[in-house]
Structure formats: C-alpha cells, structure tokens
Length: 197
Image (cartoon, rainbow, N blue to C red; front, side, top):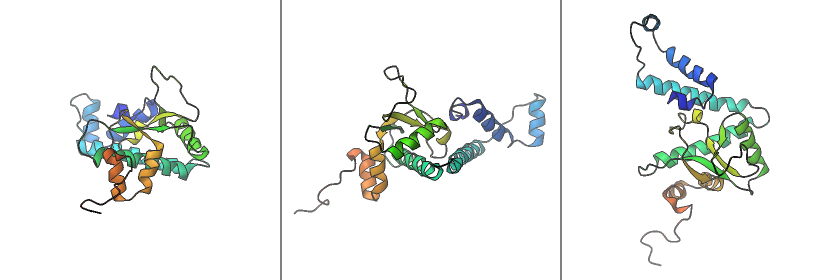
C-alpha cells in the first residue's frame, strides 16, 4: 500500500516510511537497529499516517500560484465522487478512479488538469493503444495514488467516468446523486413511485 501510494516517487516513499518509523518508540528503534527484533506498527496507526500524508498533499495544492484554490476544489470534487461511487453503492468489484475529458472541456478545467498532471496529482492513463503522455484537450486521467487514502480509495486504476457526470453529480441533491451512482446517469423518473397520474 505504501509503495503504491508513493506513485513511483522515491521522495514520497521515503516520507511515508519515515512517518511510519517515527511512530516507533526509542526502544523499538534501538531493537530494530540492532536487528534483534522486527517492529510492528498497528494497522490503525498505519492508516492514520497514510491518511494524514494524503490530506497534507491535498492541502498543499491550495498554495499553488494562480490556480491553487480552484485546483484544490477540483481535485476534492473528483475524489468525493470517487469515494461516493465506492462507498455509497452496493458492494462491487468496480471502482471509479479515472476521469475522462473530451474536446468540449472548458479552458479553465483543462488548465487545472494540466497543472494537476504537472504536479503528479493526476496521471494520464497510458495504454498500448494510447501512448500519449499528455493528451491535448481530451483523454483519460486517474487520480494520483497518494490521494487515495484521503478519499478512502484503493490505490489502483479503476473504471472511467466522464467529467460531465461528476459535475452533474455535484449540482444534484441527494436523490439525484443516488440516481447517478446507481447508473441512471442523473436521469430522474418523471413521476414519483405510486403516482397514478
């Protein structure tokens, strides 16, 4: 989990391991150094550290010049949708962790995506059929694994949802959000259940 959440970034991996090792007592560190024992960090502590590092990474986005607050809101919107898709639906093997953008994406959204990719917060989904590292104005991107613990997601590339669907989800109330998560793509019934008119 720690290696996946490092997103192939050695500095991030060192930060994760350092944060975990800081939880050990001085005595445990000494025993570990002397190779007399292995140190165990509880699962709860590991979870707490991973979520704290993830939240810190997301909070740092606010300080990015020009687009910081907007990028933070954008990534939070993506992550909250992905979390709801995983946790507010019946149990499934599918998880949404990728977003698809098309040619009709606004200039502002595309700028946010470019900055997020540049800072390692979104990654283009590169496949054998599509080897473009940074598609121009359209493509599929997955949320950086470092952000997965904050949104209670698994750090793996999952299914794709369109950016338009996520925006519609954000604008809707509870019933509309449930309809989108249930795969009805935001279309609500014309009549309430039991309405005979």
